[in-house]
Amino acid sequence: MTVPKFLLGDHSEYGDAIFVIHTEFPRFIIDLTKDEIQWFEEFDKQDEAELATETENAIKEATAFYDAEIAKYEDG
Image (tube, rainbow, N blue to C red; front, side, top):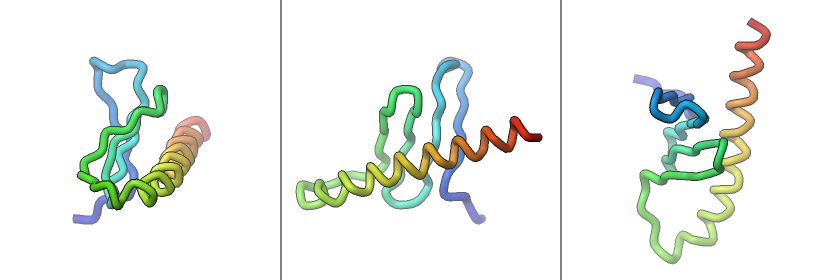
């Protein structure tokens, strides 16, 4: 099965949340309304510098993905 790099997530108990799931390494879920990230990976101290850069890039990519998906719904 091929899985997209990003998926939108929804849950009725979190009505205001905007979840984007990143399925590639480093895997995480971000709530764009709070900029909170839940990681599915474990990192050691040596990875922290790289993780900071990767996190910034991943948040930008997740936000761009969400904006593009919403634009498709609005245009559709």
